[in-house]
Length: 314
Length: 313
Image 1 (cartoon, each protein chain N blue to C red):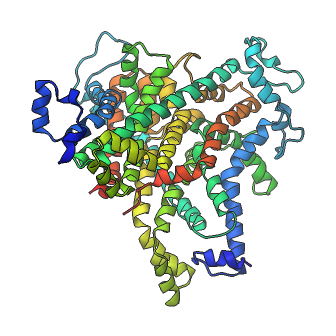
Image 2 (cartoon, rainbow over the protein chains, first blue to last red; image 1 turned 90 degrees about the vertical axis):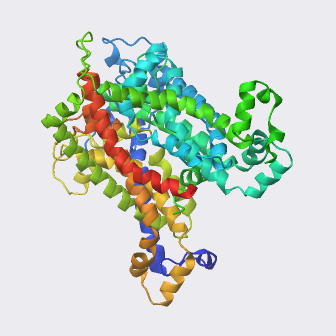
């Protein structure tokens, strides 16, 4: 039976009974299995040696958990991997080191720096535009919003060739800067939308009072709107970082060397190289998944409120 | 308007500025300046590529012979429409989109119904649901590719251990299954956002409606059908259109998992654009295909933006 305290908080969509508890427990368990199962298997595989992940039937739980695959990634920079010796990555676990394994750590750093720059620049540029559209009742604000949102309608793949030519003409091919710039095109429209929804919820009397006290628009933004919008600002930072961390196709075309390639590009190289061992690739996948998952779960409240801000007001 | 108080003296100095100042109020000038950075950035990295792409689509550009690039008008478009591969891609894209959008939406409604109940651990569960959303698509692709692995994958292991199949089957490598297998990976990743959007819509339904329905003797299913479902319409439409936009142009999983194969079993429009542009180096055809896909997306997302834009009115 559900506890009385809980029952009073219940939304009473389902009748309160033993059956309700059982149904909720069953579906909760199914949902946990569905969302966490595949990732759990990825983590489990990454802790197994090559001989163990190729067992039939599969080892659901690592029989001899090993961090060998992670050691291989973090130690890859120290040894020279050639075509000849890549099969002999580690005799004990018969680990196969793909060529390019030493690129993983630099690409991790690239992903991180690009993500941080995108998050910061995206917020700085979007804040003022969102304030202008949400707060200042100027002519054509609706048109301005449509113009910004409509740029996201074109498929990314359609933008690649012109962006490639643009980046090449600016001599920015194989730079992290080229990624920062192009990712802004993806993040800005959505960020502006999040911030507008949030700014519009702030009571307009605060704005009127600030303006009556002689605040300029910039001052009203800095002293009234920004302090009250912390959740939306956090959501925007997280969203932009995650978008940048996960982005694939722009980075695939715009970066060809390790000075600029991000983690998804290096990992996709392993996945499409059929000689690569899955134990190694799985460990790389776990490394790529950790930062976004930690951020998403820690900032869950902000992300959910940001993603849904005003989206379904009807 | 008390606006002039905030205007900086430097701004009002030149005579051109004087004229602008008389023409537009402080509010308009501020708005223009505050919005300018975004418009400048988007003009360079969004509007320019969009226009340039359209221009490219009118020329026969083939990088295998870069010295000759004749203007062909709508020639690239007619060539695309006459190409049987294009219609295969349309068919594959439609199937993939319908499967992905339908399953994602149904799953999202079910998950939202669960998270809308009050029970211990609900907060933890709703945080956990973000896990697939946060997973990078490359990792999503490699994870499912490994699960589907014909030799050592978990799917074969699970089905064998449950006694549902008696020998390991091929999943991604089977042309009849591959689109559904890729769709499954996409649904897994796209479900959380759709579920959150549905949940927010559900939370906005007044409690009184449920109480009234219960008093009237409605059971769980009747309450869902007559109270929840009609109130879900705005969220449902948003999810349907958004998921369609995402699915119709999805690319990452096709590159990572199957590269259009086996044969042409996962040869979708976005994959065709990639092949024509970066493998065949036919930039003109690639741009024309992009525009066809963009127009299809645009027609759908017009609804999406209308739904979003309404709140500003």
